[in-house]
Image (cartoon, rainbow, N blue to C red):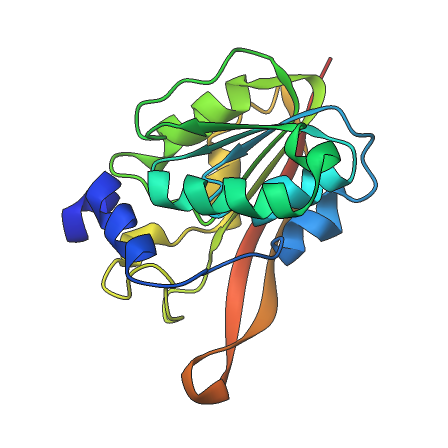
Length: 207
């Protein structure tokens, strides 16, 4: 695993390419569109596609990423979307491998395709602890063992199942609303269509 998916790995990845991901993740739109806007944490925000979509729909967002290059691009995107959107987002550079968000602070905590060194369960529990009573946790990961991983094809440990995700949650404190594998199609090099598999977990913290 290159540099254990640490800061330099991600900085190099963003520096080496033009904009990678400007649009919101489809599972975010599918799962959050019906929620009442409040305070949201976007953990692993990248270039800000999800944070911008949330802010554009009335959410006040804390958007966290390890790579300053990604955050710089995200701030630029937010500026082009206007002050109403930009003013709803706080951009934070932090390493999710050891960063602890405020306890029970957010009505929504969302994290998509995040790869960090160390046990995944520790990260998920920290993210879950940040959800306020009655709030929603949405976690999406690469599900299929033979699908191309968009960050690093040599890292099968970056993939996850819905069982893996749900196992990190205390069933006495959480109601799992969605736990399923979904497919989506992306266009790769040479305009080749690639079918990817997402593990989608949406859960609500009991009051």
